Image 1: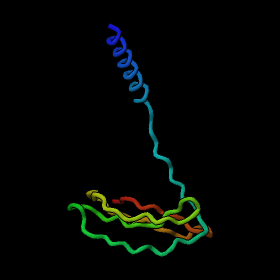
Image 2 (image 1 turned 60 degrees about the vertical axis):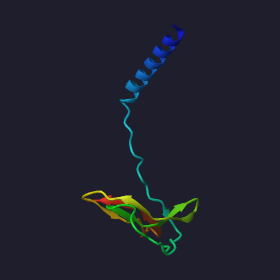
Image 3 (image 1 turned 135 degrees about the horizontal axis):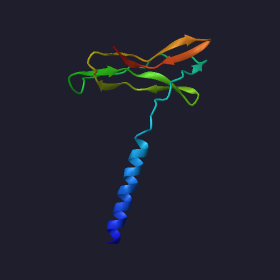
Image 4 (image 1 turned 90 degrees about the vertical axis):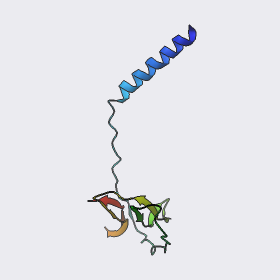
Length: 107
C-alpha cells in the first residue's frame, strides 16, 4: 500500500509540473554582436572531403571571439534545408573595430 501511495504522489507531482511548465514561453537569447578591436586572422585552410550523405552542406570554419582572443571553429557537415542556403560566418568592420556576423540558413 505504501508503494502505491508513493507512486500516486509522484505521478501527481509530475502532472502538476507538466501543467505548470506548459505555460512557459522559452525565448531564444537575442544575439548582440560584440565589437572587438583585434582583426580576425586569415581563414585556415580546411580539407572538406566527401559529404557523409546526399543532401549535406559544408559549413566552413571561422574565427570566433572567446576569452579575449580569436579562436578557430572548424567546419562541419550539416543536413541541407530544402528551400534554404547557408550564409557563412564573416567579420565586418564596425564602429572602429570588428563584428562577427554569425552564419545562418536563409531562404
